[in-house]
Image 1 (spheres, rainbow over the protein chains, first blue to last red):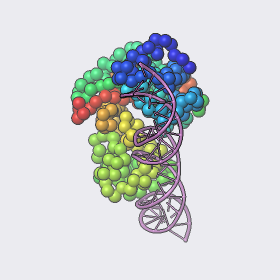
Image 2: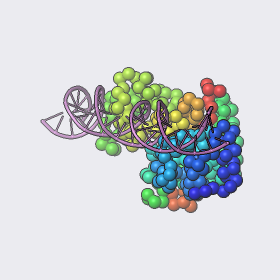
Image 3: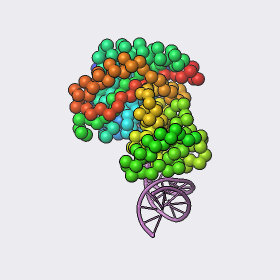
Image 4: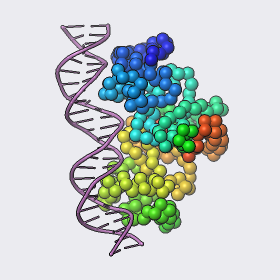
Length: 147
Length: 147
DNA sequence: ATTTATGCAAATCGTTTGCAAACCT
DNA sequence: AGGTTTGCAAACGATTTGCATAAAT
């Protein structure tokens, strides 16, 4: 339930930048996400720690997202899912999204693909006058459990 | 408002496969989407043709999606957006998603990127026991209008 | 004529918000 | 103390659904 000390430090620091506190409830959210093996929906988060209140979870995840501590994923089912921001977990990755059960699993793409992709997307963005923030590369299909 | 004849034919045929009819309301939806330059949300669809009823639009888009006539896009705002299926419009493409206003714009990636990507994703899916349906490559950022 | 689609209004459900109490500094 | 965060319960809003009527075959 508790996260690596540097993770907590970094989360606290990012929150402070927005004049936000790293409270117990927020620590709990970060801890649960840190120990999760895949992005979690709010019902899943609440189930993993009964001390979490639903409305506060929504509010705190929004704050943590603004602070760049967590990242929100819109999958194929009706729930948003959350995971720690990539730069807090050390690797850039993408998602396998099951259109049957909604579960989301991480995967990484070969570095060569990533860099080619980045270059191509940069060019596309420029052509369209678009200011890119990040890219999403998801594979949608049926997960091993649902096959 | 009316679509190319072969588009209507193909839509009708795909619906028939599911024992569904290609009714006037469904024709209207397909027609509006065919004449749109980008994916449309339901409020946008309703605004473009006052003859469309909201509940029927939701129901019909779900049917059209099952039939493989339209494709649903989950963007960054609270609305789903719809566009004609790729194999009805002849080109594989991706989306620029504006996190400010929610608008979605199409773009195409270089063929070499696409084929490399496909090959890499195929391998990833196999490794995870995942049965892939399609991939999503989106660029999230701020569109020209919102900059 | 019989089955299927439509449209209105009401229900659903993930998410948001008002507000008084609890918490932090 | 003085402001922020919390948690409950109520509100919100995109989407779904029940049901009586209209359309399609």
